[in-house]
Image 1 (cartoon, rainbow, N blue to C red):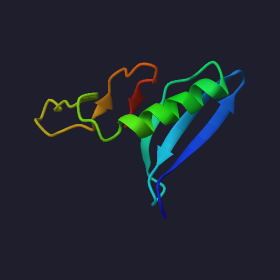
Image 2 (tube, one colour; image 1 turned 60 degrees about the vertical axis):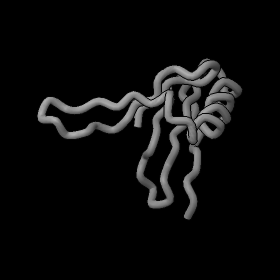
Image 3 (tube, one colour; image 1 turned 120 degrees about the vertical axis):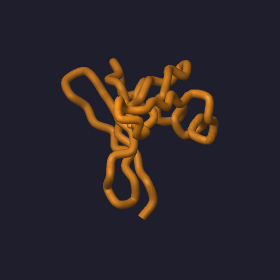
Image 4 (cartoon, rainbow, N blue to C red; image 1 turned 135 degrees about the horizontal axis):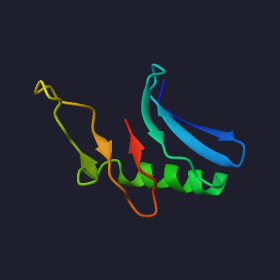
Length: 81
């Protein structure tokens, strides 16, 4: 099964989650004030995913690698994997 985006709404805010084919969450978006904003975030993640520069990689205090975070990509939201 292919990865998919899941769009959800809570009150007036929307967000999306990128899920792997096995159902594991790959990325959580920030909250958006509209569904259109969340859809724009999905489009931006889709377009920018192959580019390495937006990702911030850090190591834990024990030296093991942590999951990368996505820094702000205009007009995209920041996301956390």
